[in-house]
Amino acid sequence: MPTELTASDALLLVDVQNDFCPGGALAVADGDAVVPVLNEWIAAAVQGGALVFASRDWHPADHLSFAEQGGPWPPHCVQETPGAAFHADLELPDDAAVVSKADRPDHEAYSAFDSGELGEKLQAASIRRLWVGGLATDYCVKASVLDAVEMPGLDVHVITDAIRAVDVAPGDGEAALKAMRGAGAILEHAEPA
Ligand code: VGL
Ligand code: ZN
Image (tube, rainbow, N blue to C red; front, top):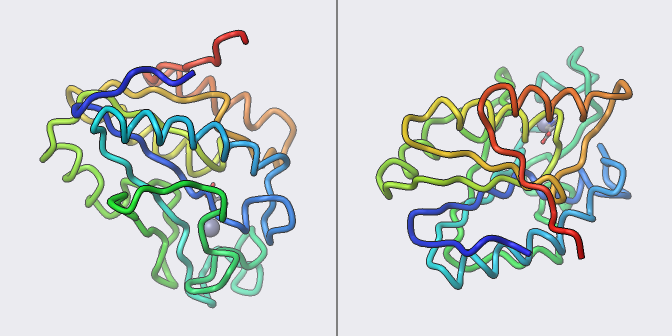
């Protein structure tokens, strides 16, 4: 069950895109399992007047992170393709703010804070608590959370039942959780049913 949210809360949905879900170009095991959990948090955000942000990996077709350019990943989340679209079951409110990242060929960005736009909006709205879920734990969730904890006056909560890891090496997801906790993020565990 999500926490009760207010207008000083914001929810950040990280890269809940088709390419990171089963069947996608860079599928995360069980990636789509985050969707129903995040839908509950979205409902809580709408109910409480909290801001909702949805980041998306938004690569040009020749992005430097793709194998053809010598990068580590298969092509994924190419701008305007179905793989880059948000998962169809994600119930994004109409007024959710979409934050695109890594949208230039020669620059990688795992963090939703990369452009500065997200941080500015959180500050402008005097947000005190940020709730984070999405994909993937060991890349964009981790990088976004590590940037978020640097913002003064912002408590950062990771919704642990609403994240999944790529786990290129076994244990990467666990290590990312430790890194986020070590940096000051609060790991929110699901309440027992
Ligand atoms: C991501 C790998 C490559 C992510 C993005 O959203 O976590 N991972 N590009
Ligand atoms: Zn990417």
